[in-house]
Length: 100
Image (cartoon, rainbow, N blue to C red; front, side):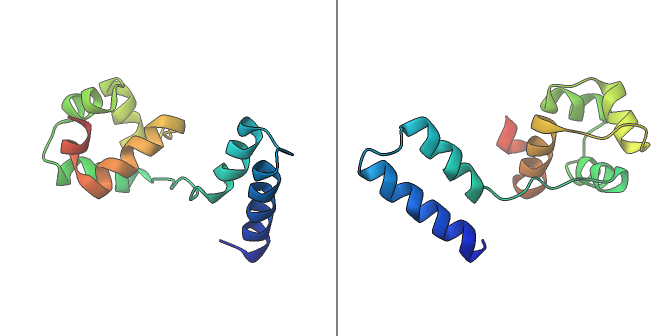
């Protein structure tokens, strides 16, 4: 994390501690510490699925999406976004057991 963001978050904590910033605003500053969401290529998505030894329909069920969506991701016709990217990251690191 950059020194500027570190300084900004430290200042926000000081403001929060003295009552100069509410809890909701403090949470927004904390979000700056989150790592960026990784983007996945069609090849990477297929590799993750095959590493977990599941079919497209089973993989889709774990990710709470449709088999056609997984197929489109793997054929580079569509790209996962939002929650799907987070779930793919989790499965890549911990396997499908993390979603069971």
